[in-house]
Image 1 (cartoon, rainbow over the protein chains, first blue to last red):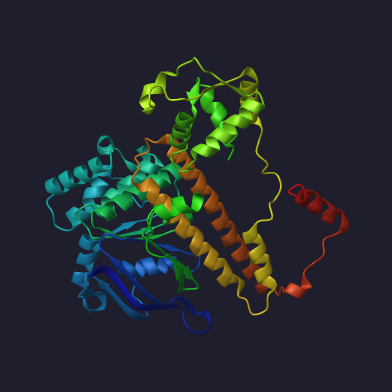
Image 2: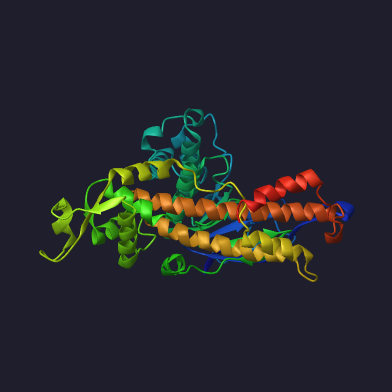
Length: 238
Length: 210
């Protein structure tokens, strides 16, 4: 069963002359342990696809299933639980709360979900340590480098064993070495069973994905084939 | 790829055997470019002919046993000459010829696709984009299991990824430029002619490649 399944999703903003068709008949299935990258120019519908996958917005038509559950049929409470427990979001500009330390930023979603402050804090610390940020736990976002801030944001997105990671240009504001380490991290989580959708216009970052989907004018126009073995490369270069 | 200069570089560390040179060449280029032993010996013969290396019989390289060579087997060791060192030092500093646009096959295909009736140039561009990204995925997969300790390998993979990425970016830019042009009413038949001085300048740059 796929962690995320989008069935014939369409999205229209505005009406009449101002109508914009952002997504047209998008079907996408993301099994556990798989990273999908969505590439396309600005205005191609990448961000709409991600917000609809993340249940932050409703499609005009079509269905979104998270772990087999149709989002449209969920109560508001159930939807909110899915957002807190199942889905982790990573944004280009990190979206960390400036008044909270790194550890507090990471443990906040767990506390909001009803976990005791002490347990949430310990889980937050553990997530930061996993990402090599144990020493930075007490620092505030403005005391961290861009790369560190994004890793804190990833820790926040994955804390509490969430099964779906959604990232919008997660390394857009980072240099190439930091960008690569962010993708390597998301890739590592996927190998442990997380499903991920990463939206990017950067082919080097997209190439970390198992499958790359190309979006144009709200439609999927093409996608890469499933992985071939490394042998094919060596054959080509010899 | 200059095998010639790569061999000179390896010999600049001390005398070595042909087989050893092959192994070290492959190890130091991240095992990405295989080299057959025949190629090594042909290159060594040419280097010797040009006075850039000489045989170093009598000198036993320290790595002799590590190679697993049969003791007493007829093996020739090579040593770099002063002329070879000078050649190597000069080669490192001379920029490879990237100054003029090659007759890039992909660029040609896109230029042609604009004019062939019934051809959607954007579809052509997308087909190439998908292929290139797929190739980049394969390189990235090779990198995945590496922790970065094999520096030569990481450098080679980065070079390939940046090269392919630059082609994808050009396709993205071409895609956008063609869409804008069409939105502004551009048609193949109405292509503007360059002025004579501009034309001469363009041809001068293009001709360097031939």
